[in-house]
Image (cartoon, rainbow, N blue to C red; front, side, top):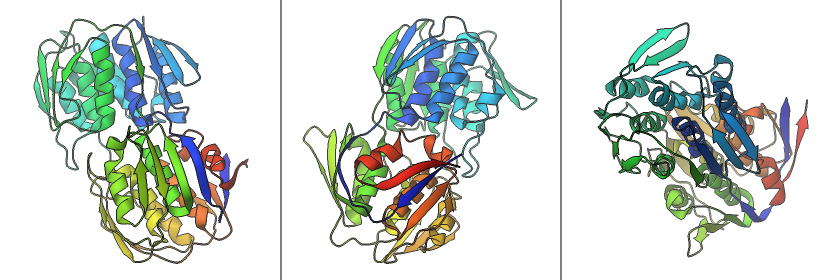
Length: 422
């Protein structure tokens, strides 16, 4: 099992490329199930989550080739049953349900695993697929969906307790592309990753309008065809490196970003006293650590609000920012396990009922810490960049789920760190 040793005190400077979006890649890879023709997908990040999705597709019978970030998938003949041993490793594997159901009229998928950051139910996925005509049964830990007479268009409201469901929107949208008639999804997730999936599907011959808004309209078609597509930049990876630059940077430039997707993160960093400059095209930005950083309050919200996937990283930034900051996570109220580990490093954080009160300290000190989920592990790496001494971050497999070579990219920027195998 790998761990990361981070020697605090190095200054970050230089330029790196941001990888393709992990959260966009997963449903796009799954959407290849919808056609028997070749799908070529570029800039798929080399992370364990995309590797698991590729393994799932292969286990279903797809022919998959991967080379230098490009994945070619041919689903000429596929099974309707996703294997438990692979599905249990990654919650996002649930997004094979919609395309399997649409293509095969049947889908058998185990209830998935994933991050331990609170309850992430699949009831909205199932409600949407039932509205399209699917029959839902549970047996032996599996979800069994059948649509013997095919799927039919419907009006579906995907509003959840904590806002729209991204993967639920993806699942219903994919299923509806081959349904008979028109499907209207109300309270749809508006995240850029949903729009990227819709663009991929439309390039395959789907008829989808409104993606990127709360109302998506899908006119079903008889079949979809081959496609070539490049995945959007990963806004959370970009945000994580923006946070790293705010903590320990002296002019860090990120290429292959999308300014529009980073508005909420940019606003938060500027509020905290840092500077973010974009080029005219909006695909490159340079971050400068502020001379007078200050505490700020943040509330997570569905896109275009501040993303819950950046909450832990900003907590790490604010842990050594003068003043008091209040961070409220309205999406996952239990997503504060990183705070206990940051406190081991000397942070002054109080967590209560989905809210963290962070009182900035002058400096953190190194300590052995343990990653509990993907974004928490990133927060610990960021905190270690300026901590006094050498921080050992255990359970590094969490960070490998969603960051492509994060240690190598930080090293390129001047960080002093190394990955070691225990």
